[in-house]
Amino acid sequence: MIDTSEKLAGLLVPAFALRRNGDLGIGDTQAVKEAIDFCAGNNTAILQLLPINETGGDNSPYNAISSVALDPVLLTLAPDVVPGLTQEIIDRIAVPAVLASLNSAAVDYTKVKPLKMRLLGEAFSNFRDTGLSKNSGEAANFHRFQEDQKDWLSDYTLFRTLIDANGGNPSWPQWPEHQRTPAQAKKWLETSAEKENVESGREFFAYVQWVAWLQWNEVRAHADRHSVRLMGDIPFGVSRYSSDVWANQHLFDLEWSGGAPPETWFKDDPFTAKWGQNWGLPLYQWVEHEKENFSWWRQRVAKSVEIFHYFRIDHVLGFFRIYSFPWVPELNEKFLPLTEEEAEELTGGRLPGFKPRSDKDPEDAKLNAEEGQALLQVILSAAGKAGVVAEDLGMVPDYVRPILTKMGIPGFTIPYWERSADQELKSIKTLPKLSLATYATHDHQPLVSYYEDLVRQWHSKEGHAAWIDVQRLMRFLGLDDEDPAEKYTDELHHAFVKALLESPCWLAVFMITELLATKERFNAPGTSGASNWSTRMEHPLDYCASNSPYKERISDFALLVKTTKRLPHAWQVGTIR
Image (cartoon, rainbow, N blue to C red; front, side, top):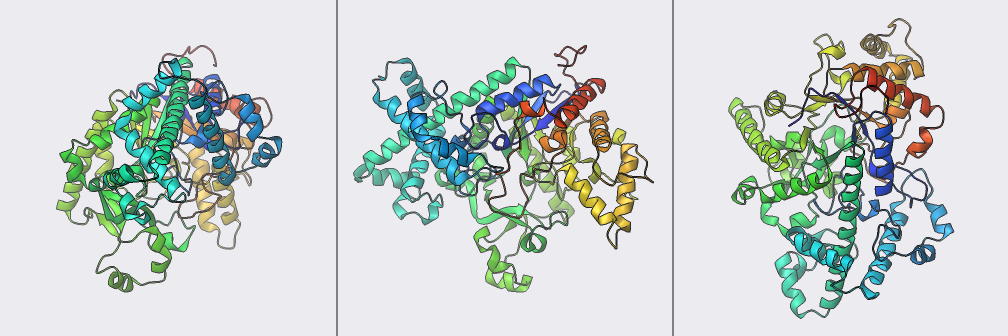
């Protein structure tokens, strides 16, 4: 349960975006520890991360190939934190030319992933072959991990090994028929010439997960030592090409793909504008989950709270009803030019819409509300003492936020989306107490870009509406609405930070771009390609804390956190940390 009597400040930064001296082209667990140190030193009680589960070919943390397995690409690869890894292995593989090629503004996953997996492969071989018996401490810990985690690890390691056996393709419906379920694959292995290779691969992937859980458990311990709380992220859906779906096909409806309806806010591609966002996520067979006492969900939540003090449910609206497509994203281009009638003919009478039912009929809306609340109660029960936060943005039914409030679950508040009937921005003092207030999530453009776009529209030929919005924004911030800034200035930045921290909202979270007033964007919904989920910060956080113009913004933020009384009760109030 969230304690709203303790108002806090938080920082959101994707782990992959962090930099540190000596990283391998992507943020890692050591960089997360340094982010914890940064938070502790700047009055920031909560560090929020995106999902850290193993990603597939699109590198999206919201389309992971496992709901439990952690991403090897985020591991710190150093001898003291990877059993079996030596400096000789590192020096032989990560030569200066390789390291130089990784030092870019974006993560080059085509280089980073193979490099890290090669290092882990060499470390595993050394770990296995240098006389470590089952009775030695590290080997015993590894075997204990395999036994303790077998409920999810066994299927995952087989699935992960079969991905490699199928040329890196996780789309299990395209695999040979004898590999399309765990039962079929295990039966095939009994007589297969590949059995030894597959079993060796499974042990390697178990080793990688052992190392990953060791490192992330140490991240949690580091946060506890510094009295910083970690917030994770559990997506509502799971990739249809994941070990979860492959191993538990009866729990999923593979005929439909979950997504989001068309929204005017995101105009990045014509398909999203016309049809909506097709995420490709299979729907849940909730009746089947209930028969098993929601054990899959309970396991998913339990593993998350081993690392995180809080977790955010991405797209909580899906528990009530989810916008769904009768085709997978691979067919989006085929459907883009079609009319509704043509699409309906092609799908046998089915069109995108809300499932299990829309909210148009009051009785249907009532059922959606009741079923969604019951499902969220399962999540709360599984969470135990961990705090649950709901991302409730988008087309939000009227019943959702009252239910979240009744259950004590904070939703999201983006101040410039909160408007009165006359479109005036609501006063910061009227925002809900039980909420997470932020100017942007990882899906939105940074605050600097938002304001500069607004100014560009204001100065365009048809800029009157934008001028009115700029004035509204100035009034919201307590600035002169007749003489607004033409650029995003430090004065404007201070006003934005101060306003959010002065809100009554339980938690005020600043994405790293909002804290530093920079323009990095981490995801543009409805688009795909190398730019998404790959943008890195220009500098490490410790550099920012010591160099202008960032250090002044960070110091101003830390002081504002103190003066707005957002220090945790356990922290000493009399000094800036």
